[in-house]
Image (cartoon, rainbow, N blue to C red; front, side, top):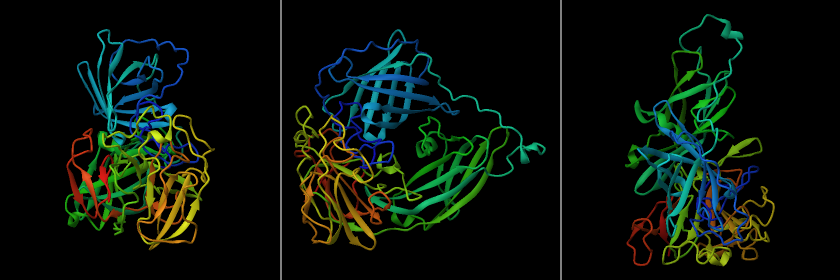
Length: 527
């Protein structure tokens, strides 16, 4: 909801049918949402831009200019950046400027002329091949909720550098003037656990979810080699290579290799540890960090940042009825919501840590009907939003103009308007349930009202920082939709569609689920 590097929107065309509903501005962060793939919007084509000059293909590292649906009335342009770790594994990022999307690319594989990569946070896969002249890569993009694969061509940017520039030499000062040792004098990073590590229940498993804040307090570049999570003298997770890269992000920077952290720069490790048995979840954890520092031949390793684990046992009813509903940007370590830090009042908050952008599918599994240029083209639009518990209405905002798909935001996006028309409920215990992006004029409650479980609060809309109709819902500890910490919760009961992705919901097999939360990409039915 509040900002987005997330599920693409139907409003643009398809490449990332991923960024959708809740995308957000660079500052302040806003609300994200999903809108799975959709047909390209039909717009009068501008004069066709000449195709970029194609350079000879050597390997995948470097910068690539991508075009989806090239030659159509609404092509989607992107930039892919790829680097290679010392292990030989690839890492990458994909940006789609017109959709405001910046996404981590993973599982990058090159096998002869075949190229494949995934963007897990939006459920998308690219598979293609280098052309005979070795000048470009052509293939197909597929994504959950997309009617048909979309053609994509990638062309290497002329003169793009594949590797980071060599570090600048650091002038010797202080202890740097002492005789050189093999390992650094001390661990250069300060490390602390952000907020309260908590436990999420989903898919029959328990997930320990939290973040580590790392700050390179030294003057030299330092590379995180590995991170171990330890409990009761047992290693729960050992992160290195691509697994470490997938969990790391430098604060405020879009870098290819996040493990190499310049002096004075902060990074965040997003941890998401699965346990098949609830009894295996530890009561506390500590961490072992191994780091190499420029100009030293040996790494330094420290054990630090012990933290107690808490489990918020919060059960509510779903915020919607019927279905099928797609859990866009739902709980997962790759989800767009998972990594949205919002600095407010001198603190950084992750209110949307366990948020879901619900989008309704029709009985054929489509999130959009028609050309996608009207809000009414989306089955989500106008659906009733209901109270998840007996509660007191804490805040209401109505009257924010609605967005038109593909036409940008109807109002400037600020901290006040990012969630659009919204309702928040005090559900007790210091917890607040937040509903965002409602239709203007649809809110049926006022501040101070007492509402009953299942009572209608408003209608699904497309207001605020949203690119398509959907409901953003999350629960947090605190009264502010952004200046609060998101907590895990469960729905008392729902049904999950168990058919393979892309199967029409009509007649698809389902399973009854109790006491869990839908995870990223789930398709669910409510009562």
